[in-house]
Length: 450
Image 1: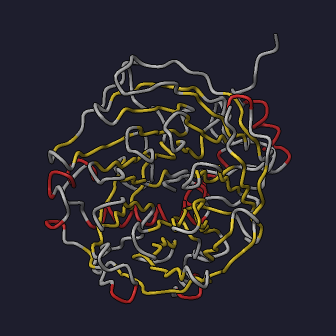
Image 2: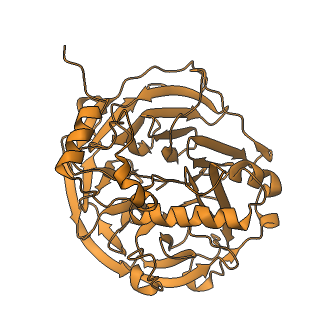
């Protein structure tokens, strides 16, 4: 949900990434509000907090915090940078690369030195997750058919001309949409989560273009789809400790070497239920806070974020506190942090929602108080910054939000659209036999026979 994230309104073996050539039958109009396809806003932060990126619909917005200016993207391929909703964005570990991908089946690799697109890869299916290897030599992405692909970026130094690389399959979950991809802190493993409750830990091979054939472990325990993954870095575990969130309203902690479940935190029980929204305690995003033992959790029905404490000695999780966003209908759709800065960045928003003339809306908020000098959760005093206190100030908000201020009525409509979309984000959609046959006849992504 770094981003991730994911439109999985599809039948189990019939993928929704083959765009139909005409709209669905009109008899489904009464379900528009339930079935609307909304692209939640995403945020990603440079490892050193030198820049912040927000994706909303097909729009990619970047702000440079070093010189306090909006970034102009350069894409030599011409035309729009993306022509459909962006579903995942991510910075590389060293911050030199940035990847964006989504429903237009384009995976774009950007050099953050000049914000030029240095490679555009065409996927066969819509893209649901991305990851960049720790050495910056490979970009991996997952499609809606459950296949993880890898792209080789040999010798990239940010100065070469655009690379025209082809992706090759790395591994597959088969008929299960992959919802999140992460490399372990030591770069030895690539971890993939899917809609069918599974987390797979795969040894990342020395020659990725030959495929990844060695599975280290499976982390099994979630009772609903897994929505997000993150790693906690520890001195005694180079591979890190994995944490995951999902539709079962839990955050779980794992040993990826053995695949064993270390602890489970029932975060959904800590959130006030909302009868009008049904079961909306889905964990939509998690973000580990560098240099401390806190984990930020975004929950669908929570106007704010929940902070969990990870006790590294006992390998346990516990709820530390809830940081509420007062005075606004702010339910975060994506979280981001950096190695330095002590800040947690949050965004909420939606594109393509009905009931407004505004096509894309987002709202950025920042929480401070995560300092290296205060690594203990008991000493943390997280504070939601006022707009004037956010790094970059009004210029950043105007760039990333699209406007410094947003009309409350319009934003409430966007917030309702986000709630509806994310509550149904990864639920398997059932189709009648007639509808299924119609979709098969009109899909346009079939490979032509030679």
